[in-house]
Image (cartoon, rainbow, N blue to C red; front, side, top):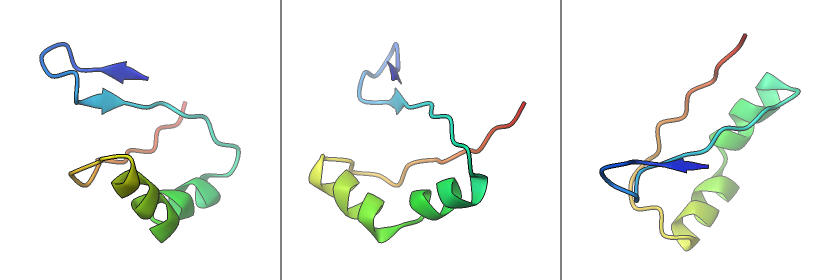
Length: 52
């Protein structure tokens, strides 16, 4: 986890996933949206999938 130098409320989380389809489904899930709201996420995050 990294946070913004100018705004520590901006965070970057980097994860590795074995199954891209499952990762995309999780990122779009209601369960994740609900948990983010519970933890104080106030905006819709940008989710970007990377590959090497």
